[in-house]
Length: 515
Image (cartoon, rainbow, N blue to C red; front, side, top):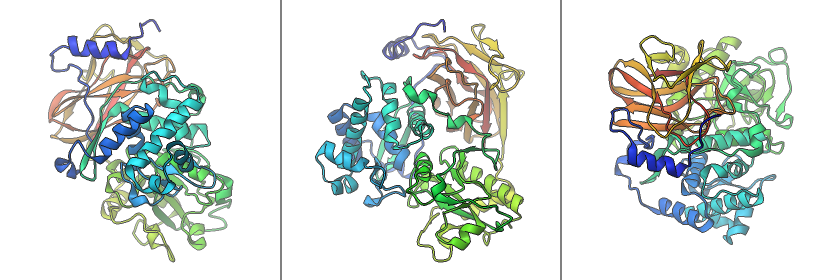
C-alpha cells in the first residue's frame, strides 16, 4: 500500500488538535451496552480497582484484561462455581483434565487455588499473570501496543484448534474496537473504543471462522466446526431414529469456549449447534443425522437436536435479541425440515428433559418472545440496506476510488481510500422511520492488505460514536457494529472515516440498519 504508517500517538494528537468542528467530525467514544441498573452504578469500585492493580502488577493493558473478562463472564464470578469447561471467576481460570490454567495462575501469583476461584481480586491478578506469562513464552515484544498481545490472548483461550483460538481473540479485540460500558454488581466497567493493529502472528494463517458462513452441511447460515468424534454417536437419523424434539441449552461459558470444549475428547459432551450472544452467529458441531450428547438422557439424545446458547443461566445480559432471532430462525428451519410441531411440547429446555439435573435455559430465558419468533419467522420489523451504489444514499469525496477487486463485495463494486490524518468520511444515508434503538451492520470485502483499524462512525441521537473494525479479516458477510439509539428522519447514519493509524485501504461497501 502506498500510504504512510501513522503511530497511534500521532493520530490521537492530530485528533485532539485539528479535529474539525463539523457535525460529522470523528469522535472516539465507547459504544454503550448497559443494563438498566447502570444508572445507579459507580465508575469506581472493587472490580475497577482490581483490574487497575493487576494491570500494573504484570504490565498488562487494563482494557485488554477487562475485554477478556467481559467476553468470558460479563464480569460475573458466579459465586465461585465452575463453567461447563471448569473455568472459575471473572477471568475464567480453567482447571480440567486437559487444561491447568488455574494451577498455573496459582504458581505464578503465589495465591491458593481456592482464592483464585472465589476472590475477584485474586482471580483478576491470576488472569493478568497468565497473560504476561504467555506473552513471555511467545517472545512477544508488546511495547505498550495493545495489538501486540493478540497471540497471548489466543493462547489464553486454551483452544487446541488455532481457528477457535483466533475466533476467541478476534472477539476480544472486537470488544476493544467497539468499546462498552457494562454494569457489574453496582459498578460500571468501561472499555473505551480504541484503534489497534492486531499482530496475529501464526494465527493469521488459521481459518477465519467468521468467514465460513456457508460451510455448515445442514444449515446454510452456520459455520462448520466438527466436535471430537469421542463426544457424539455417529448415526443415520432419520433412518434409525426419528427427530421430533429441539432442546434449548445455555453453555455456562463463552461461545469460543463451548466450541473448544466440544472439540476436547475428554469433554464427553456436545451439541449440534452453538449460538453467539452479541450477534447470533451460529456454529454447527454435530451433523443433524448424528446423535449429540447433550440431554443427559439417551432416549432424548436419539430423538432431538441440541442448540447451545452462549451465556450463563444466572445472567440475563447474555440473552440478546440477536441471539433470540438467530436461534428462532434455526429452530424454525429444523422444525420445518423434520416435521417437528412449533410448540412448547416439542421445543423444550434442557431442564424439561426427564431426569434432568440441569436448569438451563433458566429463569431469564424469554420463552414467549422466543416462540413468537419461531412461529413468526423471527424477522425484523423494519430494515434497510444502503449500498455504495444506491442512488442518493451514498456520498464520498473524489479521494474515494471504486473497485471490483474482491469477490467478497456487496453488489457490483465498493469504494476505497488511503488513510490520512484528516476527516474525509464516506457516508451512508438512511430514512429512519422513528426514533429508537436499531442494529447497525456493515458489509465489506476482507483482503489481507486492507486496513486493520478502520473507523466506522455511527451518528446516534447522543452524538457520533466510533467503532474500529479490522477490514483485513471477517469480510464477505454482515458484521454487527452494535445497537444504537438513532433519531428519526432522512440523514447520514453511518460513515467510514479515513482517520486511522492503520496502513492499507479503508473500505466503504454497504450498510444494513434494522429494528
